[in-house]
Amino acid sequence: MRLLLMSDTHVPLRAKRLPDQLLAELPHADVVIHAGDWVDTATLDLLESRSRRLIGVYGNNDGPALRARLPEVAHADLGGLRFAVVHETGPATGRERRCAARFPDLDVLVFGHSHIPWDTTAPTGLRLINPGSPTDRRRQPHCTYLTATVADGTLTDLTLHRLPPR
Image (cartoon, rainbow, N blue to C red):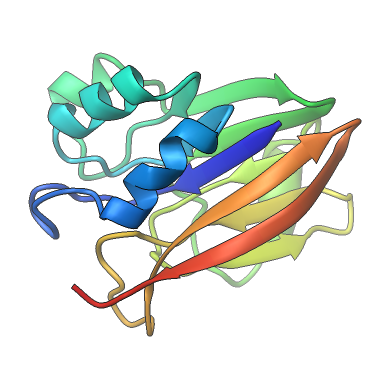
């Protein structure tokens, strides 16, 4: 199962549209994961219409229209792994400990908010992944998104994709 992970798209505030390279990945993904801060419902509509399966949550910049359609936390069993998606996890310091305590029954937690790509594993085995942002790099050198493969209870081929400057 191929995954496409993104967060913090902030369309149309930070970009007018999603990058072409990211959109070109949609047909190849079995599951698209968006960890919040969509900003507009048009991006949600676009991903819903082009994704085989979309798992998304709302973020702190998402208003009532998005909050009415998306949960704060989403859970899914994918390829034998227990996933959750949430927008905010708090400060980087202590993140693994905090998230492992909050989500003791998970294998993978996908989160956003910081726009900083992240891939760590808590002492409990919980893997924490942030794909960064494909539209707003903030203090990062590149805008980013992730792809991965899940099969037989294993997450493999996690690849950070750097987008060219706009």
